[in-house]
Length: 70
Image (cartoon, rainbow, N blue to C red; front, side):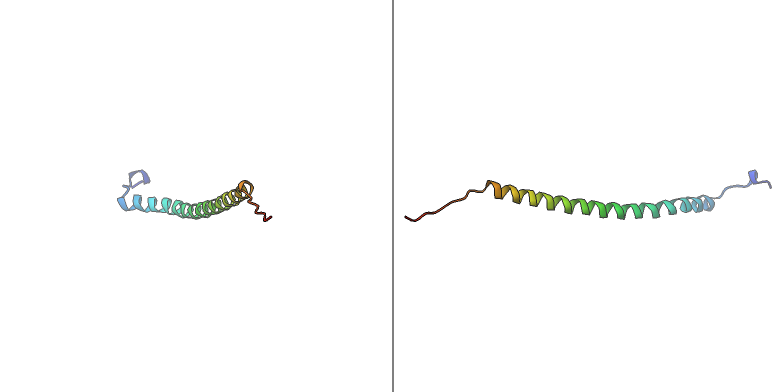
């Protein structure tokens, strides 16, 4: 039998598919964890910036009441 005459079995196809997807799955998991960490950092920085800007604006726009006794 020559290599062209060999029949490809289902097990061979499944094995090759698992080999290919195994490497991709590892890379996807690594990228997913990095994306999650970056997303979390962006959210934390955004919330902190919004809080500080709102606090500053509140101080600028607040009314000062002065009470004098005569």
